Length: 341
Image (cartoon, rainbow, N blue to C red; front, side, top):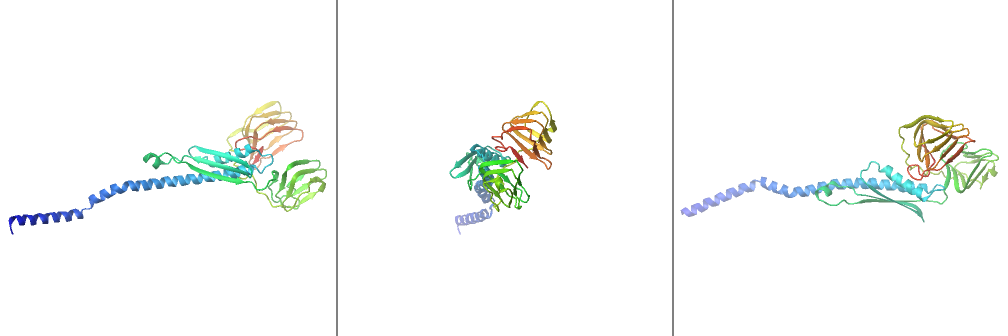
């Protein structure tokens, strides 16, 4: 073999040896592969995180829309209900359900008369971290819509939820209840769920008892129906107003002219004798005590609501008092003068 042939053979063996060694060394290949795959992995992980956040926020938003629509529709079941009350109640319910959700929520409420329904539309820019920070994409908008329709056309002006008591609605001698264009219901299954004494009068578009009726037939116009199916509380979905620290404790006013502000009145509130009290607009929480208007006292206030909370909390108005009150037009007590927990 010539020298040139030997050198060529040695070079061939050298190249073959090092080619096999390079093929066995995969460290460089792993780094190249990882560099290529890592952005794809990051995109997948980031998208999964963002998708999870979007799904969670979308679910929360939909639940709030559902609650708002139901609350607004429930308002339309009540006598003297106004469109603005239903809108305000729906918005209050939405905000109560989303109070812990960060970001700005767009709220639109539409009340329709044909058919009678409430539609709630909610929007929010979710602020996704990965898409916004790494990819520079603008925020997407998540949306939720819910519609609740009102079945039946007879508005309710009196509904007693007690399911067992005798005389759950009791009209005493000389008393008169008038609800010309609305319904009076008692959910009590007692044989005397509605009771009327001689000389009393209950006038309504419909009087209905889940149980029976006792008393003088002439005390009802028209005659009441019995064995009616119970009605669910139309305000069950209404969130109660917040209870703050005590503004006053065991407050008693017996004379002079006074002006009170909204707040929490612990131990009750008593307005007696010749007191003349004016209430500024807002919610008055009566906590753990009686609210009594007695003597010849006078109580007036526009756009006020009373929230009664606590086992010992009751409300009593006596015959010689003068009371002129109207319910709030917005907030948690919209359309409601008295709300008991």
